[in-house]
Image (cartoon, rainbow, N blue to C red):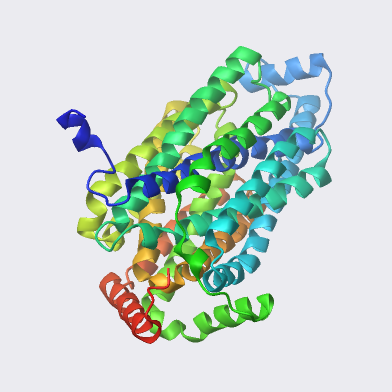
Length: 480
């Protein structure tokens, strides 16, 4: 390999490149669900197709288009039709909030218990693969969801999202085991970067599919749901083949499954005082994750409200995906040097600046549409950097023998934030309006940054190392 290519090789110097590559491939695989299903396609499909829409004649549609473009002044009939469309949009926003937020609430309940159980039974890899297969099957089933089929959409999307979110937790729990204290930030960023590489490839293929097969209209997107499932299934194969799980050799406890998982999780809660920095960080993380999850869940809906749809929407998401991937890659170059906390300060500041720009766009009558594209890059950059830095912070605070459990707590905070953020944003947007919902979004990042000031990264890392040494002395095992 030429010297300049070796310098660009993200796995250079790592002792287990194949394992890290297979781990990162799962991030690439599940992008088809988080990007295509959650962020881009199914959210709009629920809002515009599954939710019943008012029916207008071709003449009425043409009249509304003239009113929108200013070619015709609004009258009583057009204002009534526009109000009916707004009510349908609000119902669609709320329906999507219930599906997405409700599924995240279930994950909040299941995640820490399943994480504790996986730690004690040695089931991390088995659960990771099982949740992936369930998500694939339910995602493919979205093909059958048509207009007005809200119940079927819920029966398929809710278990699919639960499986996806749980899989994210277990994937993250492998991070401390496949890295070291010196490389955890770099390895986390590699996984995040591979995820955004997958997103970039998906968006290119999506754009080609829309142009080639005429799938630009929302009601024609059902084949794309099947494609998302196929992508996930194919690219999770390296995890099945190559990701090593030391938990698999652990001696299994004969206690009851429920009692065992609850007891282990209760022990973590009782001992929370000794993991004080983790608790403080998860509190801050929960608050700013309210905003992260809202942006993920409502990105395409927000973009559509600024007039971006069809191929333009694909292009918009494509550019912010590139920006997010670059942020994750850049983060790998400096995060281990300056620390996770300082890295998060940088990206939360970008979040606040970008959301403030959205407020200006929402209230301004003269703001150009291109400004939304610029601000979108800020959102993407912040999302890519915040994600990898947050995951690394939990990895630094987690003793190796409790990684699935601690990342289960992290997943609980993230999914609870998703449920509360999406539901609150959807409620404010549907009941009060776009401006108030963007102000709420901005406040999540402001308060999160303030709470992050109380985190002592060094102290949290020392506690994790001390707990790990005590565990080794007592058991003679690292306990991965």
